[in-house]
Length: 279
Image (cartoon, rainbow, N blue to C red; front, side, top):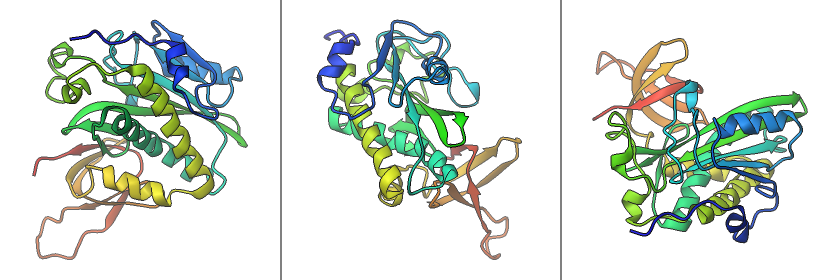
């Protein structure tokens, strides 16, 4: 098998078609975390659209600080600095939609470059055949209330062989190469990813979330599933994920202990861990 192509700034820029994202681009061989680096740059005035990429991460992390498996020269570890808010949305709505739009952008980029169809586990896990192939971590830093800053962190398993995953991750993790059967050009994939992300954020800013809501719903594997929801205070519920609210929250109807009783109310889940349960 042909070895994967290394990441290269000139190669990324050769197919980059964005207006702003990626025009300032930093490529590191190794970082503790691209998100931490991007947050530091943002706090020091880095411009909208600045991108930080690493060939490997020694301290990559996901939601709730969980370690992110980051082997060198195989995957995408990328963070994008976004400044400003949506004109047609409130700040809270815009912040709640940015992670969902980012996850949707990755699925569309993968479809374009590799013809691989990914699904989404709410809010922003990327799935290949029900196993996690990537994830989004958005972290906010508010310079002023009028100029919010969000760092969008993207981790995507691209060319890592399944046998390379730690044993505890093999049943639940996946890589695009399983479906492509050949190494994918990460430079082209990053360029396409930034374009899809820019298009999604521009649409969110100018037209709101109506079409994006429909597109996300189509890709979302969580809807219609029995799920266990664990909230930040460790309270947990079990129910059926029925829909996505206009602000991007997951609407879950808890299961009644008595089959003939009145339907249970919908719970709007905005911040929690969601686990798909086997039927």
